[in-house]
Image (cartoon, rainbow, N blue to C red; front, side):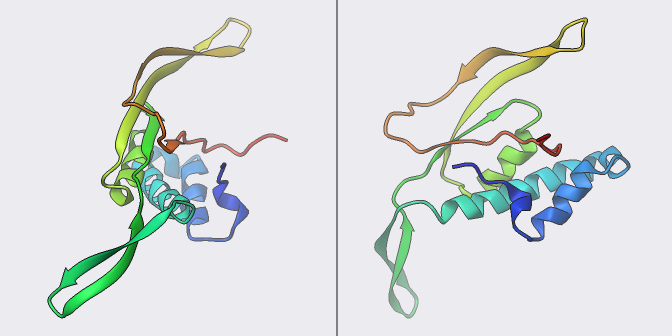
Length: 142
């Protein structure tokens, strides 16, 4: 599943606009916090697609039935650029496992580039839901 934030009118579009704004990008704290906020929004949207099962929770007033996720996903991201985005997901999926990829753009003299992957660290993905959270803040060229 690919979720494109600006296909639906939500508050997330404000955060996305601020990420893309050339002036506001200079405010590093705001830039990182907006990445985190977008991660939180996307985590919530993805959570709607997970499988849930009922469980009983003992409350001070008795027993309540609550549907909770059957399993927590594994979240993968590219190191450094994706860390605030990753944190936003972790704020909502606080039980998930993490996978990290170290990668960079190797720019050629002609301006073209290739993506070089140096290392991937991940827990077992067997039978797991894997979310590859890679931020892409520039508008796609069609």
